[in-house]
Image (cartoon, rainbow, N blue to C red; front, side):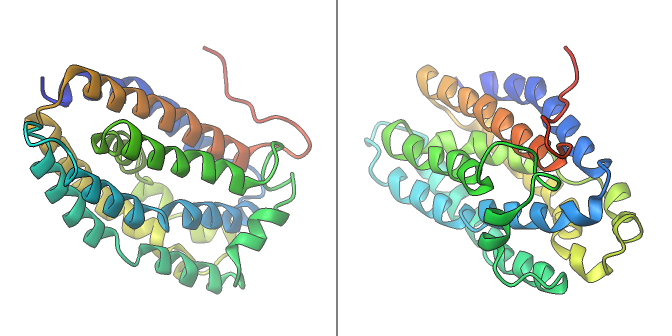
Amino acid sequence: MTAATLVRPALWLTFPAVRAAAHALWTAPRLRERYPAYLAVMHGLIRASVPLMETAAERCRLLPPEDPSAGPLAGYFGIHAEEERGHDDWLLEDLAVLGVRTPDALLADAPLAVAGPGGDLRDDIAALAGAQYYLIRHCHPACLLGYIAVLEGCPPDAAVTSRLPALTGWPAAAFRTVAEHAALDPGHQRDLDALLDVLTLRPAVTAAVARNVAFTADRAASLLYRLAGPPGGTASRGTS
């Protein structure tokens, strides 16, 4: 079966939760104070992107010869790694505009008024990105597609990003990465959609990719809700 068989329905089901969490963040009070922590979290995730794709491409070379996905996956990961290279530096530059030189220290010290309760934000980043290494090495490198699909499938809304300087009081230069990804991610999503339409995977691998979509969406939404959470309390995630 092609990867799209199960993966695309999984994306349709999970995207609303991620978008709702992002909306909660961008409409939360004290966005000016929350925004540096958001950038630091994004830096923690994005600096893992290229190493993850390089690891996945390398694992593709170890797949058995009868696996028809090896070549297309290795090509996709190699190209996309180059497209994403240096984006973590953009975030460092954005943070520098805000006067933040060490994003890891900011994450460790983020007050509950900025990031809801739940421990060190770096633990959330490690759980989200670190799981991908396990799936790449011990399941199938195609699993990383589920992670990429979620993180790039819900880009910042350009209408929102254009208002962020006015909403926060931070200079426009602090929003380069958000604006760039609002413009770039839809194209990346189309590239991934095209791959999913033709990529042949074993049913068990396709199911694993779909499960990673659900895992990534749940973790990403939780992380965004933490950043949007009220001081000293738990973030509201609405009712179902």
